[in-house]
Image 1 (spheres, helix red, strand yellow):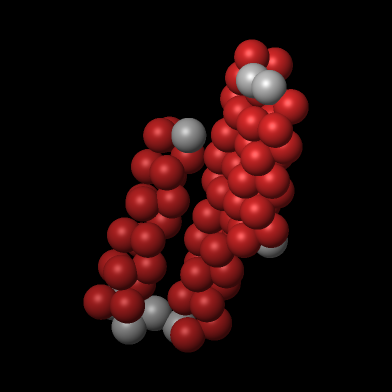
Image 2 (cartoon, one colour):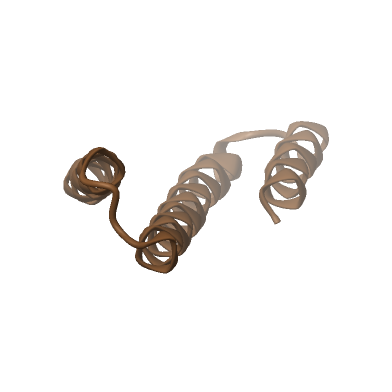
Amino acid sequence: MHQRLRRIEGQVQGVQRMLDADRDCGDIVQQLRAIRAALDKATTLFVQAHARECLLQGGQMNPAEQVELIDSVLELMAKTY
Protein backbone atom coordinates (compact mmCIF):
# COMPACT_ATOMS: atom_id res chain seq x y z
CA MET A 1 0.00 0.00 0.00
CA HIS A 2 2.80 2.42 0.88
CA GLN A 3 4.50 1.85 -2.48
CA ARG A 4 1.22 2.42 -4.29
CA LEU A 5 0.66 5.69 -2.40
CA ARG A 6 4.22 6.85 -3.14
CA ARG A 7 3.58 6.21 -6.83
CA ILE A 8 0.39 8.29 -6.66
CA GLU A 9 2.30 11.03 -4.85
CA GLY A 10 4.83 11.03 -7.69
CA GLN A 11 2.01 11.34 -10.21
CA VAL A 12 0.60 14.35 -8.35
CA GLN A 13 4.03 15.98 -8.30
CA GLY A 14 4.28 15.31 -12.03
CA VAL A 15 1.00 17.16 -12.61
CA GLN A 16 2.31 20.08 -10.56
CA ARG A 17 5.37 20.22 -12.82
CA MET A 18 3.13 20.04 -15.87
CA LEU A 19 1.12 23.00 -14.58
CA ASP A 20 4.31 24.97 -13.91
CA ALA A 21 5.46 24.23 -17.46
CA ASP A 22 2.11 25.27 -18.97
CA ARG A 23 1.63 21.86 -20.55
CA ASP A 24 -1.36 21.04 -22.73
CA CYS A 25 -4.67 20.90 -20.86
CA GLY A 26 -5.54 17.53 -22.36
CA ASP A 27 -2.28 16.01 -21.15
CA ILE A 28 -2.91 17.32 -17.64
CA VAL A 29 -6.47 15.99 -17.58
CA GLN A 30 -5.20 12.60 -18.76
CA GLN A 31 -2.75 12.48 -15.85
CA LEU A 32 -5.43 13.58 -13.38
CA ARG A 33 -7.65 10.75 -14.60
CA ALA A 34 -4.79 8.30 -14.11
CA ILE A 35 -4.36 9.60 -10.56
CA ARG A 36 -8.05 9.15 -9.87
CA ALA A 37 -7.94 5.58 -11.19
CA ALA A 38 -4.89 4.83 -9.03
CA LEU A 39 -6.63 6.25 -5.95
CA ASP A 40 -9.74 4.20 -6.70
CA LYS A 41 -7.63 1.05 -6.95
CA ALA A 42 -5.80 1.87 -3.70
CA THR A 43 -9.13 2.46 -1.96
CA THR A 44 -10.50 -0.85 -3.23
CA LEU A 45 -7.44 -2.78 -2.05
CA PHE A 46 -7.52 -1.08 1.34
CA VAL A 47 -11.22 -1.81 1.90
CA GLN A 48 -10.75 -5.43 0.79
CA ALA A 49 -7.87 -5.93 3.21
CA HIS A 50 -9.81 -4.27 6.03
CA ALA A 51 -12.90 -6.38 5.35
CA ARG A 52 -10.84 -9.57 5.24
CA GLU A 53 -9.12 -8.74 8.53
CA CYS A 54 -12.38 -7.85 10.24
CA LEU A 55 -14.17 -10.96 9.05
CA LEU A 56 -11.31 -13.20 10.16
CA GLN A 57 -11.55 -11.67 13.62
CA GLY A 58 -15.30 -12.20 13.59
CA GLY A 59 -14.93 -15.89 14.44
CA GLN A 60 -13.93 -14.88 17.96
CA MET A 61 -17.12 -12.89 18.52
CA ASN A 62 -20.64 -13.73 19.57
CA PRO A 63 -23.30 -13.62 16.81
CA ALA A 64 -24.53 -10.11 17.70
CA GLU A 65 -20.99 -8.74 17.51
CA GLN A 66 -20.45 -10.54 14.19
CA VAL A 67 -23.56 -8.91 12.73
CA GLU A 68 -22.38 -5.50 13.94
CA LEU A 69 -18.95 -6.09 12.41
CA ILE A 70 -20.39 -7.19 9.09
CA ASP A 71 -22.69 -4.17 9.03
CA SER A 72 -19.76 -1.82 9.66
CA VAL A 73 -17.73 -3.42 6.85
CA LEU A 74 -20.68 -3.19 4.46
CA GLU A 75 -21.23 0.45 5.40
CA LEU A 76 -17.57 1.21 4.69
CA MET A 77 -17.84 -0.52 1.33
CA ALA A 78 -20.99 1.42 0.46
CA LYS A 79 -19.27 4.73 1.26
CA THR A 80 -16.34 3.73 -0.93
CA TYR A 81 -18.39 2.90 -3.99
